[in-house]
Length: 145
Image 1: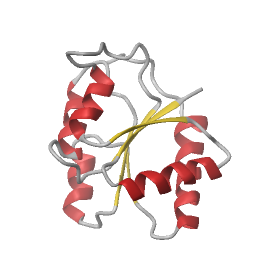
Image 2: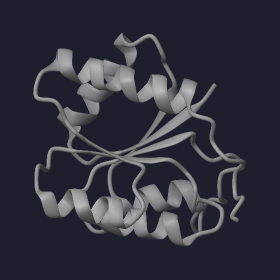
Image 3: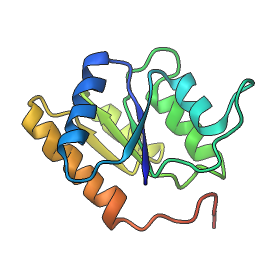
């Protein structure tokens, strides 16, 4: 089963996103981290845990996080050979053009504004899942050309 790393600090957004995935046809395993430091530890390990043997198939990344921002997390992901090509979708409420441009500039694969209705969130989650987990062919983990 493919896994998604959801990096989100807002408890309501976490709950709604998990419910939206539960309502969709594609139901991946979802690992939730609530800040940038926890997200990086989940991907790279930390002093008290080793790196995971397998990376998630997709990272859904909020931008406004306590401590390390989503931009900081994205920069670390893209700087590491193991995670450089890991698909990262920014999932944020920000409609700021500077955030969109900065996200793509740092190597985000996609930028999705969080829908305001649950029905639209389910549709967005379905589209994200269908594309990134079913249709998209990801490169082998850690391969850099």
